[in-house]
Image (cartoon, rainbow, N blue to C red; front, top):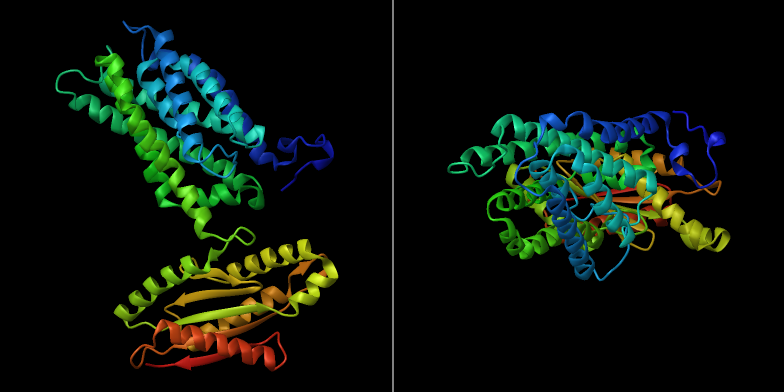
Length: 415
């Protein structure tokens, strides 16, 4: 891909992204500016509601939601988490306002959230707002098609409105997901690692779906009970807590320097994996990897280079593992991996691939190597305990280092 760095002013990150990503985001922004106006007849038509007051209420609820979030997280500024449940208010606006109102509502809610500490590059922030507007337009058109005009979600027993809200929320989520995937995979990988990881998480979609349904419930109550919507403020607090929970959980379970699991989280997940392997009669392995002469590397190149080496080695190891394998930073310069459904022979082959990948890694033009120990549980007999296999991997690693480093040693255990 072409980055056109020579054309980009210093600090203007958008012009340094690949051109397909720029085209994608620019197209979304133009569409977000035009479609709410062009498609206004296909969404909510003017009715008895005072639209300006409704828009102000939605903005006020968004402001309250953001402030609740700041209280819950201690007022920190952050870039690596979902956008404070802002999609709820874009979705509610799509259900109760003509589509062109999406522009001021989204602009103000996003502007306030950015002002209050959500630190995202400006082009990503504007692109995210555009994606929500486009998703909301699609939801508005869907709701209009299902409930017709007058646009009453609570007509009769409310069953038709319920179907309309649920379907519109699904359409919103589908369009939003498609647009964010475009940014995640058209931009360079390193710049979108967090977004790609978030989009691959099932919990993100569950949380986002719940956030949208809160917005739909708010819209339905506002149409009939108006100010009863204020009774939902505790629900907004719980929604914000849910939106914050997953990023905070991920942060707590992952190592800051390498992005791998922390050891305790890895151990818990690995024990679950061991039980699954036992139930299926499958072998499994534990792999330990330790950077060679890491103290000398730090002394020569400095600790910042050492941090870069740890991150590079973690990426090299992860690149040779399967999606179901678990990688963690054991401590210092040592990593561990749990390999389910893996025989001793396969574990050795994986370790050798890892060793070759690390050997090919360069940090500050310096080579790094790694020693590996593999502990293997043989499923042909009674499976070994996890702690014993962990100890076997550690012993194998010690032998690899004692025998000259930059090599793999395997120790097989049975019950």
